[in-house]
Structures are given as C-alpha cells and as structure tokens.
Length: 278
Image (cartoon, rainbow, N blue to C red; front, side):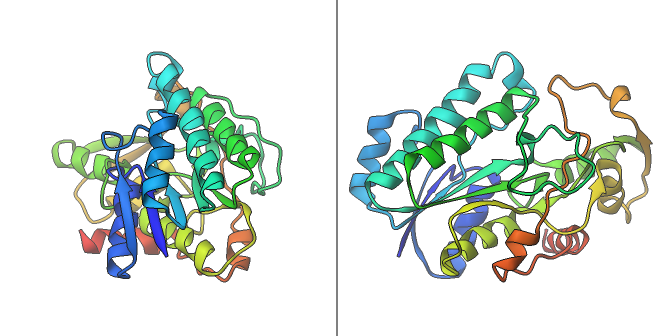
C-alpha cells in the first residue's frame, strides 16, 4: 500500500511521515512548494505518476485571524479549491482519502458534546472554508474519511505548547483565556487515528478526534507550565480580543471514534508523553 501525504512540512504532515517511517510503510510527501494543491492539473499529474492507494490530506491554510481579511482568498483557495482537487483526484485514481477538518465548523453555542451529525454553523472565515472543503470531499464521491479535530499540538510546531513554554522563559506571569472549553489534540494521536481508520476498514464518513477529557486554554497552559516557575492567571476572552471568532464550547464527542476500536489517551497523558519526548 502506498500513501501520499499533502502538507508535508506542517506539524501533522511531519508527524504522519514520522509514523509511516517507523512502520516501514511506503509513502510520498509533498509540501506546498512541491505540489500546489490549488493547481488542479498539477494535482492530477502527481496522482497519475504516484498512483497512491491512500491520501492523507494534511495540507491546510490555518492562519485563523489572517483568514478574516488579508488571507481570506488564500484560505478559500487552499481549504476549499485545493481540497476539492485532492478529493477529485482521489476519486479518479481510486485512492482512499483521509481529510482533516476542524471544530470551527460549529458555532460553539452548544453546551453538550458535538456529535458528527449535529448542525454546523461556522462563525469565522476559516471555519466556513473548512466546512466547504468537507462538502467538496463528500461531493467528490471518493472513498473518504473526514476527521474533525481541535487545539492541535505536537513535536513539529508551532503550537500552543511551544508558545507557552517560550513565553514562560521571559515572563514570570502569564494570562490565558479561561472561558473557551475544548479538547487538546496531540498530532501523534491524530496521525495514529488517521491510519487506524484505513487499517481497521472503518465505515467511511465524518469522525471527531481529539484527546480525551476537556480543558480551557488556561487549564491547558497550567498543565504545560506546572513544573516551571511561572504564575498563570485566568482571563476572559473579552480581555484578549482576537480578530476571528473563537467558539466558547467546542467539545466534540469521541464515541464514534472509540467505537472503531481506537484507544484515545487523555490530553494530560498525551501532553506528558509529548513533553517527556522533547
């Protein structure tokens, strides 16, 4: 079986390559310089040449605040048009597709856990583009999995963990938002789940995947910095304004993922393992 990875230099793309190497699996990986996924002819040419059995679509525009204005066009081109090109190529060349989406497809107004079947209502430009990308995957007719994830961290940053550790080096006190609730996701867990879907021949469709248990950004930061001499203080979102809307409650249910037989570590256990490795 041959895998093709998009977004090779992103934090998930690098994690996927690391795991595939560990497992001695055959793969090719392309970053944006090697394959412009918004170029339909280029995408089709790569699929014709490589003939992958599985596509792990990790390429994305993820600058959430810039997507509101100066990055709006690129956000749409990459997350919608690029994803459509990858999905259409997967369909044409009979490859299975695992595409990554986001909790931002929800508006964050639900106090319960979001199910895969719940109504979507993205409130920022990034979320709207990722949702349109999901629809492009579905409409392509490719044999596909869409994995919605949230609060991603991992070895190949940049991400919240590295940011907090860097700030703690020069600031004795930090303030972190405490009124947004979600689920952190280690790239290792996410990458392993993407491969698990293929290996277990799980039913195609949409899956939520993060690490287990919930946290606010403040609680996440406290855990990251608990062994460092820094004081972490909670603040409200109003005290830390950002250009793009952030969901207040983006806890997604993990039951469907668990029913595939995949064991999901808690975010605290995942974070501890990650920190010990770096």
